[in-house]
Structure formats: structure tokens, C-alpha cells
Image 1: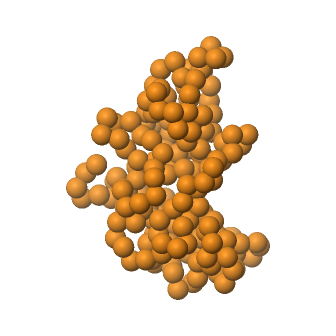
Image 2: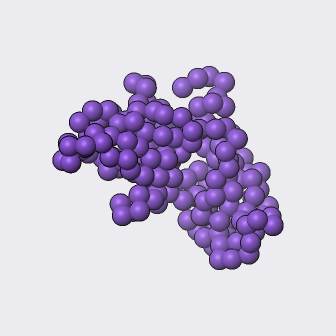
Image 3: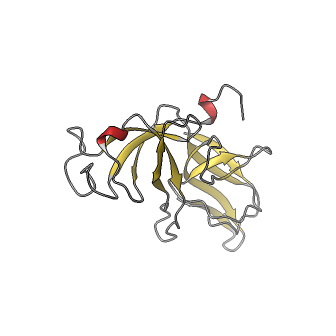
Amino acid sequence: MNTRRISKTYATAIYHGDPVVSESTGYIQQAAPGTTQIAGIFAGCKYLSVSQGRTLWSSYWPGADAAQDVECYIIDDPSAVFTVQANGGPVALADVGSNVNFAIGTGTASSGMSGATLDASTIATTATLPFRIVGYVGDNMFSGAGPGSDPTTAYNYVFVTFNNQDFKSLTGI
């Protein structure tokens, strides 16, 4: 995990678990689905709140209320593996090894958790897609066999790793 910055004027909320991209200014912002390489996954932030007059630690950036630029934390280890739910599907066992995009949903302010999901309609071999499917929940002894672990049902959970990410890029950001 590394520390990055969000501009105090950036008005879009970023939730814990949202993919983020590097701007040309050095700041990060919430990623839009597509083939742009991502910087990492947002894990929280710290900022001086204008309304409360003190430093706040938060699992999400609300998109306003900072007196200065926001210090944020992103998971950017190129070998990190994440559990993510498909937005349809199912994501089948045969899809392991394929690349995939994400969809941005609405996060939850009360928990700070992301609404991002795996976009099951984009599973392909396209090299510039941001994530690679490396397994599905239920295929190892640690993940169990609960809801979302069946690779034949819609909205199942899978394991993904970065495919098109800043630290893996040969051309820079």
C-alpha cells in the first residue's frame, strides 16, 4: 500500500475498493471503466475537514470538505489479489485466466464501501483490460462454499489481480 494525493477540489466520492487512476498532475481520481491503466485500489484517506475543524480518517473520500489536498492510501502491489462480485454472469471456471473490466456502482457512505463490481459482459483476452481473473471463490480450501461460490450462478465472486496497472506498464503513466 502506498500514499497518494487527491486534489482538495476533486468533487467525486471515492469509496474503499474503488479502482483509481493517476492524473497527469500526480493526483489520483476514481477510475472510469475502460482500458486506461489503473494506479490501484482505494483503501481510505486522511484529510483536514473544513466543517469539523479537525483531521478525519475515513474509509472513503466524500468529494468535498477538505481544507487542503487529501492524503489517501491505495493498494498498488502488482501481485495483490482481490475478491470481487460479478454484476451478472455467471463467471465460469473457463473464464479463469481471462481479462475483465469493472463497473462503478454507487458506494455506501455509512460504511464507506465501494459499489464497484466485475463487469461480467467484458470477459475477454484484451490485453489492456485492468484485471485478470485468477480463480473463483469456492475453488480453494480457505474460501468455503457459501453464496456466490458457485461458478454456474450469476453474481458469483471471483479472485482478480491487476492486469493493466501503473507498476506493470512498460510505457509509464
